[in-house]
Image (tube, rainbow, N blue to C red):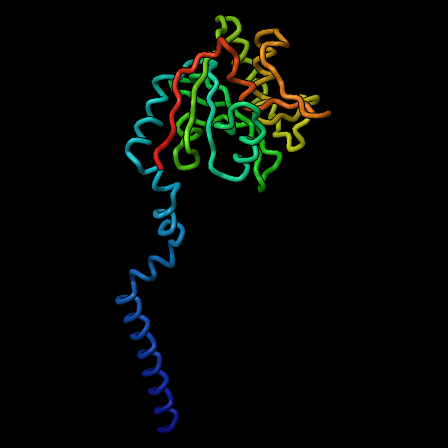
Amino acid sequence: MEINHQKKNRKLHGSLLIGMLILFGVVYQRHNIERWRTPKSQIADNTPNAKRAANPWNKKHADSAITIVKDGDIVLRSGNDAISEFFKKANTKDRTFSHAGIVFIENGYPFVYNCIGNADDPEALLKRDSLNAYISPYNNIGYAVYRYKLNAAQLNKLQATSVRYFKEKRRFDPHFDLSTDTLLYCTEFVYKAVIEATGDKEYLPITKATNFSYVSVDNLFLRKDAKLVCKIGYIH
């Protein structure tokens, strides 16, 4: 009986010792534990993206776009990832921008209709992003707003077309096939929506390379009557 009692005491003492060591570690290493629990936020604070997003000048000029844009404006952005670099190189005259969308004011706030895929979701649905998220300095190094000379009827049709494409859940076209309408890449969406709204198949040009035709980002804003509303390059 005495031997069993001693064994129980040793187990109890051992458990208490282990518990005290754990408590000691938690109390004195709590900062290290917190960094382990949230490694992404600690790392993100020092990335170029986070620093660009935190810059007051960038914040101001991203937020100011909300008061500038109007229905039907074409909002271009310059992304800072590999896919964006690919789209920039597809431009033939101006390689500043990588993505395009159409903005409409809905319930007092601007939203950008746009269609883009990525490695994780190559056939993503056409999206409706808030303007602030779309041109965020975290993911972009700049943006611009262009405005076509469209009348009220054309603007209404452009919005109706964009909303219809969105509700139909049209997907991103990873093959960049301009001949199909069910799948659309970003500039193709803008191109076809504008052509449908204006009824003019020559309103915007396309780029031809050997036996392949496509719509580049600079095809959308190099019209002589396309008005540059603003152009912002974020501070790095």
